[in-house]
Amino acid sequence: MDIDMMVPVQQVYMSSLNVSSYPESLHVLAGSFRSLSLFLLAFSPAKRTLSLVHQVPGYGPHQYVATGRDKMRSLGRQADGKLGGSVAYTTSWAAPPILSSWEITPEWQINHLDNVPITAVSSYITLPPPYTHIYSMGGPTGEVHLRSPQTGSFAEKIQEVLFVPSDKLADADKSRKALRYGSHAIEFTHIPGTNTRLAFVPVLGTNSIEVYLHNPDSGYLIHVYSSPSPRNGVDDGPRHVKIHPNGKMLYCVTEHNNLLDVYSITERERTNSTETESTWSTNPLTHLGTRSLLPPHLSYPNAPIKTVHRFRGDTLMLGPGAEEGQLPTEIWATTRGTTEADRGWISVFKLDKAGMFIPSSSSNELLCAEEGVERYETSTSGGKAHAIDLYPKSVTSYSSPFTALNSTRAGSPVWILLTDDSDYAAGELREESSATQTVKADKPMGGVRVLEWDGWLSDGVHEVVGWPSVMDGERGVKGSEYAREPMRGGSHAVWITTQEGGLD
Image (tube, rainbow, N blue to C red; front, side):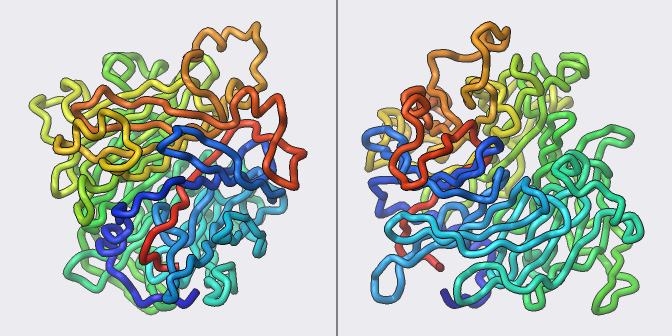
């Protein structure tokens, strides 16, 4: 796996959406908060089934899973036309803290590559262009590792990023509990028309998005600004960020008050700049708008704050373009319930060509009619999960009746991966529990589920299939030489598909 030359962010995003050769099976790599294993699944769009392909003992619980280049391109073809392998990376709640790398072979087997020790439990890991350095963030620290050009696994650790003063690090909580108030993610951009590359890290406890200069050659991050949440005195809890492929827009989900903020990104004047330090005098992020992750009747001020706090803002992801080579037309976000009695929500927001939410006709954008948004109440609370991943649907292969009908309508139809860590999905909810009354019993269950959405003029999000099913749970895990541990709820899952012209 040779290291590629740098590819512009927009080009990488667009080339990842090649669905002209739709695979018969979409593969899924999933972890769990309650099981130590990794699970490789296969989803058949034609048969609408989800089944186990391979399971390996892992180093979990694995909270987060990332693939080698991006979530929608992994097993690429080599110059001789043969499928190459793929590399995945996982975080872990294990003690002492570690990161792990894994090979996924063309025969759909998972092989462990290596583990590396880190200072604190991580919650996020990514491999941005030019694909030479692996970045992880979580709690009081973050790490930058070189990526092995031979295997794709971890190589030397070159930098540790601190979110507490260096003299406080020894006493700082480094367990998974620190993820509730520490760093939680990292995303990158190359500001168009400039040589400036930035990285953004949301930190829940400081209500800030930390901004770094990113040197793609050395891999180093240099802190330049702390961007505060746009609501003064409010405990927002910034949790996850995503950047539009135009490089100019940043989106942030807040965990504590269930909001989705959008910002513009602008290069600012640098002061006191050296090779290792730099300070920007002005915030590079300008807040442009906010949408609630909850429907109006559950959003403040229609509902009291204690109602809003029954939910936690969770994850977000930009959708694909309506056609190959087009920019995203939607952004997706999730919440999870704070208790088993509160079901979570999936929301999809319509974006214009610049990446902004569609204009609101109301002066109060949080209370206006739900224009340009659709909601789906999930089957359960989601537990600690409710992470999503998206894959573009083909309008010619194995689609639902709605897909063909809406092929020329607004929106970008997708298959949706949803993970569920609720006690119900994990098979640990007692029948006499009052929470059973809140579960949508007629919907597919399981720690990993596939849903579908066929555009704005379809009839919304539908659940297709879940794994493991009740029968899977009764039989135990099948299809693997390692069959001692069933999946007890899911944490995070990503699509892994065979794509022509992949980069790995």
